[in-house]
Length: 424
Image (cartoon, helix red, strand yellow):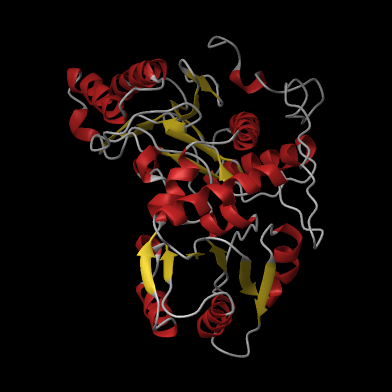
């Protein structure tokens, strides 16, 4: 496949089509019915599994309520997708036993009612300070189910200081306990339904990468290339899923812009000899996949070829080494050793890979799934991790590939398989 014209790898026979020729099947949302006819993307059994698993952990830690505030955890536990708070908090309250609730802004009421698998929906308006109003409603809800001092689990590591102060002032009789590791422990191993969603993301990523390549020509802007990639990815999501919900994004970086891998697209124009960083991130229902490639628009110079070859070697070696039981730090050390042999180890600026899953907010990264030198944890089946070895050389550029790998019982499967040797 490396010798094929990459731009035609996914395209079908119909002009402008990025869907024909794919093996993707239509993905239908599982329907689940409950008292208020609520629905979420995941099945009732999947959501019940999450709830009961967290309740067992709460009981073991003698915690009365899980009180979650991050969009990632609210969605994971309740099914309510909040892609942006717009300055209004949302809370998910799960008692160790008894009635659960989601509390959010009135303008999210229909969303909460449609998607929550929790028992009650609490909606507040903008007539008063939204933090104080929402916390008062949550405190009243908890008070109805308990008396005296209660132990409340919060995502303390991810909570802004001001919110934490308001929280402790409102719940003056409560003892607060950190529960972020309990939720992270659940999220690290993906269920079969999560895997299917992430694998669809892998198919969408390849369609988006193909569209990115289609848009490249001399003098095109980063903005135009990224916009085309996102548009085609979203079109594909609509065609391949019954009810896709997206916050997909893409980065196109030319030349020295590749040194800043999270740089948003600009009006910079492409010229011959530029290094190009292709970055496509399909996000469906808050679950993020990524596909990244680096290549040269034209013939690579020796200064460009050396790091590209090293990144290619590390990329292939690490993906081949992934399997259950492998220590995550060893993957990072493997990358460093490959780069050390060609005197590039000093140009590493970030970890070798990270866990994939819900990444609605900045707190969405799952620390225990990071392929980093300090992480002594071991890979387990149904973990989903990126592999993205990279070097960033001032005056030359940033060189990085990334694939999303599903850890299987005896190895790993690439969900974003796409050529890495791309030439123009």
